[in-house]
Image (tube, rainbow, N blue to C red):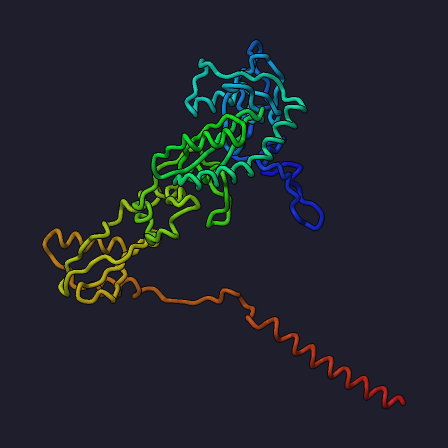
Length: 386
């Protein structure tokens, strides 16, 4: 979804609003919620819900109470209450849908929520933009301080409070870090209050964003709000190669999309025998080598000949297992494998259709020969006329 300021410019090149997550129309931000109740009026006598959702840098969202009864709409820049001073954010949701979001995030409506002071003035916005411009330079200097102190941590992002009196540093670390000296050095160098907050690798990728191996934006930075545990068993059920370089995402952990189709694969595998199934035949014991869930085919090979695979359908494998339960052995895998191709004729189709792959080369030679003939005929005609 894009806003009007992100429309395509001259020459077909996208201009972009260049607001880096602070778009005023809230049309191209992370985790944007569409208010489908905005055009509906409330029943007679019912007051509008006085809690609004406000978004800050990246994907951080919080709920604030509109105690002053301000007329707020999506995209308004407001000054909100903070522990000390005030913060600047953008309204992302108002009205009855806020109740749904609060219920989803398990936030009580009767809790003491912070308040919205006012709509941000031009002075508030100018100061907010000014401190936001310092974040990259301060992040770079803070990383240098952490390296000098020998701290095994990575400062991934810095978020300034709207009034510029406080900055939150988000970092990742494998172990517990004693950063008391780092806070003293940064407070002395920057002249602000420092808040250190540790996040996980998935949360870091969510805040920074990026492009995944699928060519699209990361799910965690666009729509994914909860991080469920992903194990290698999900890759095994989907018959994916256990290659860490292919299964890992931008955060270095297993990709969250491994869980998207896992339930479908588990349901499809219910009618299949397990991968460690052994078939007892007169030619020997056969082991399962591969399973194709969509085609319903399993490949088996004998213990003495593991390189020669025989394809069997799921029903044929269950038939052989029934014989084995009755303490009987099947004749051979070749007998069942030949049945799969006895009644089927293999036909090949031309994927291009009736056209030839060299159809673009033939007219060129004909045109050239016709042009040469026409030139020769024209010369003969001119010589005869002369």
